[in-house]
Length: 222
Ligand code: DX5
Ligand code: ZN
View 1 (cartoon, rainbow, N blue to C red):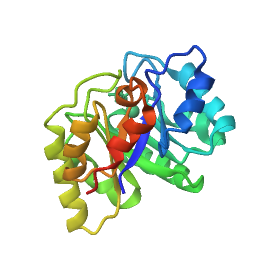
View 2 (cartoon, rainbow, N blue to C red):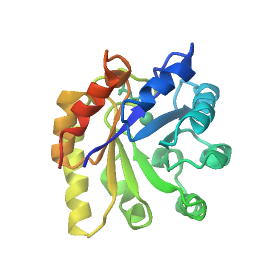
View 3 (cartoon, protein in one colour):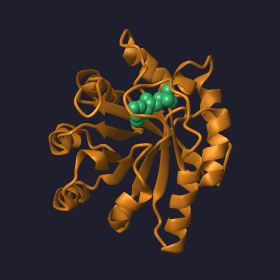
């Protein structure tokens, strides 16, 4: 069953508690918290995203799917750990030393948080293969990270298939989360290629009926 993770990046700040309440009823599976530090990407959303995550910890029992687009991964993990997120994903492009990747993996495991490794559009699957046996999910960016409302990069579909094929061949049971430009059209393409979790921001937030938008995304199955 395809899962949906609603990105809050483009959620407006005014009356956000009410909006979060409404989104809770849309039957999304996760809330996707896009944390940006203004260094790894130009935008800085750290305060707003922390406010949203704090509010959600009181409003909703749905899992937090935290997407760290930051350089100092360890610092932001420390900031979110008390909110007991379901998933934390961090970018391989932010960390080059293998030992650092493994110590982050160990820390997330110790805190019983599912581990996601995120890769940008121009990062090859090859660059993360060695970590796959130790993590739970690969977050494939289908847009350049940094803002919502962008168009799905069509070359992403081939990348999803390539990863899915590799996981199946090597008996690795990981989620493939696809993030950026997901709507009812691109969802079908991404799921048919092997995606199991779809991140959607604009498609859900801009829709008249978020519940129907989420339903439209969940109807595809690999
Ligand atoms: C972009 C974020 C995405 C984005 C998705 O850097 O990681 O989660 O907010 O928003 P849409 O669905 O509007 O592309
Ligand atoms: Zn994201």
